[in-house]
Image (cartoon, rainbow, N blue to C red; front, side, top):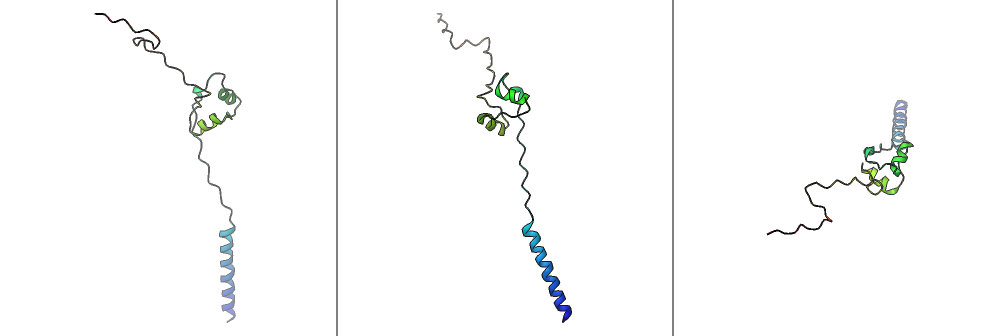
Length: 101
């Protein structure tokens, strides 16, 4: 009978320790996914992003932050370079060539 009470006490202590260990353990936060790398060669010379990057910081403009989350460069602050028109194609502002018969 004495051994039965000792066994019950041992079971009670072990189970209470097991419950306490599972309920009070701090949960580890999930690692945040790394932001995609931004192509810094597309930064406008003298622009906000380039200045901050030289200082070792990230630009804090909302448009730049949003673009950086997508791994892109803000097109408002860093407009893409315009392509040169083809030599054979007429310019948009050029008058139409007269029709010949």
